[in-house]
Length: 400
Ligand SMILES: Cc1ncc(COP(=O)(O)O)c(C=O)c1O
View 1 (cartoon, protein in one colour):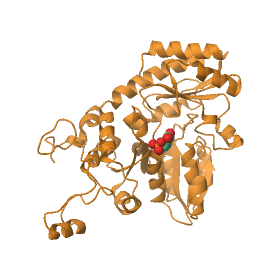
View 2 (cartoon, helix red, strand yellow):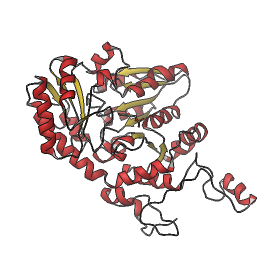
View 3 (cartoon, protein in one colour):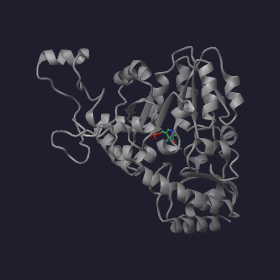
View 4 (cartoon, helix red, strand yellow):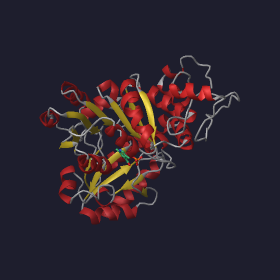
């Protein structure tokens, strides 16, 4: 497995997306090869022993590593910058779970933003406490709350920014400083911003997690996740957890995501441009009581969002007047945009968080997060903007 470019993983972003991590077999294939194998063989018993001892380099078993997966890991690590090392997982949730499990033990304490994807909240609020890990939930946008929540046993800060579904923004630099002063590690879920729009390591994060299911595949095909952190933590804490518990990504899935990465910046650029236009339409429509989009002047944290992100992103949150009835009228009036709970896709997708993604939260907890009965999360795709504007306008008109 070789690559002719000695600076392959130090190229600029758009080159990394297409070529980062690529290694060719002796056949010199153009596209990255899929090594659909669960195991590897050795020429002799001595070689097997030497490989297991780590004296000779080489793959051992699919649960640990695979050449197709290595290509994706290197592409993602190079793209993220900061000299980190990447590991893959079978889904975004497998990645979040592994990053947390590799960072805490019984008796430790986690501080996390309240506005998290509901499965992330389940791990922090329900699962980890069963194993003796305490938590405090804070308002992600209130830096003082993060500082006030620190305890002597705080080991992890976990944040998602912009947060799902309300697009609340957390000051990554400020909370990373608080975490570091407390001897804790900041794990950042960077899904909404994508690896292109926000660079968490530059802002002080220690570990970055992704659901690659979202923008990186971005074409609705596979579930996939990734964790990127410093080499010492990855090899000493994360690798043993992954190897022994086995949330491994299939090499086929790794290949699909490698192909998705090639078009990531083309898709994300178009999605952001389309989202900004749609946010303006929704913001001026009488059926919407408010719209949240990070680069709009009426986003309460526009300045912070734009200091952390290169563009406003691909997701819009807005409230349809008339509560759930108004929101459902809007959703049922859409002809192009699909009703779906996924996001980051080439196809525009609309979600009613209160009855789907955030259904498991008590109503009071939903309202505290801003998940009102009329709230819609719109993940904007790459369709023609005029078709999207017509579709969303007609659905809003119908909700009046
Ligand atoms: C912010 C965020 N993190 C994590 C996940 C989990 O990813 P996956 O569905 O790939 O497990 C999702 C969505 O599902 C998400 O929106």
